[in-house]
Length: 267
Image (tube, rainbow, N blue to C red; front, side, top):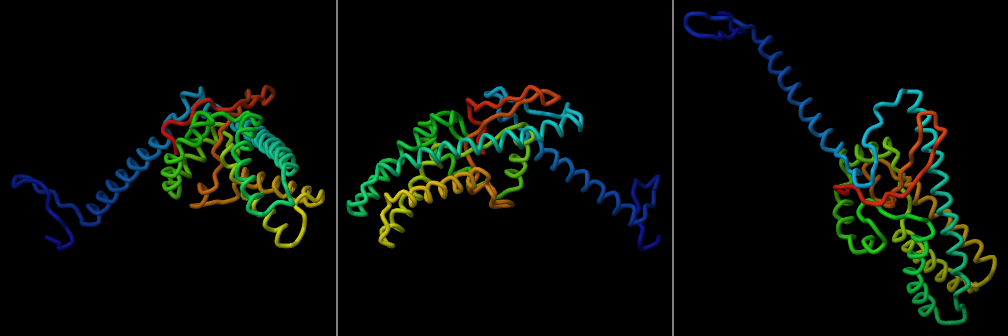
């Protein structure tokens, strides 16, 4: 028998199969096994997360032309929603600059900003009409469910998470900055500008100073909503509030609404 051949079968019938054929069979079986594992992983991230919010879990019925219309309109509405919320946050921030006491000690001014941050977060949440987010259903849970968010962030450097985000965008899910994120940004911006004004001898109540820092706050808030981070760091600054864009096949009847329940499971 050729050394590159193996014999299969019983004593009554022996079938000689070349080694390279047996190797091809093994490679084929391994390839099929990998495909099955990939399909299983795909089914895992295609879990119907948003059923409690009445979100359709597939847009597969759209033709390429209809999908192009849907995608274009969704991008426009996403940009409009994020920009309008950032403008509203800018107005709130500008109003807060009139509540300062520049003649008081710096520590007292920083404490006042700290006390105003929760008020700012609540006002933003109400005026922005945000409701549910990626891990919470209301304003209170935004704070009480923070441990769940920290757990989720630790898992956001995986391919599964990136597939989740791509999937939710195809379904028309729009992420925006929530009250907690806006409150933290408000606090950091206030503290930074107060310290900078104190160090430079400039008055934090000066009108030009107020205009400058208010515009800077708008830029920071809008940048946070856009989430410029990509790749494995995409989930670090991901906005957590969620809205749903819906449109007919022709893109004529478009509307967007906040989700009323967070995805199950959260991610």
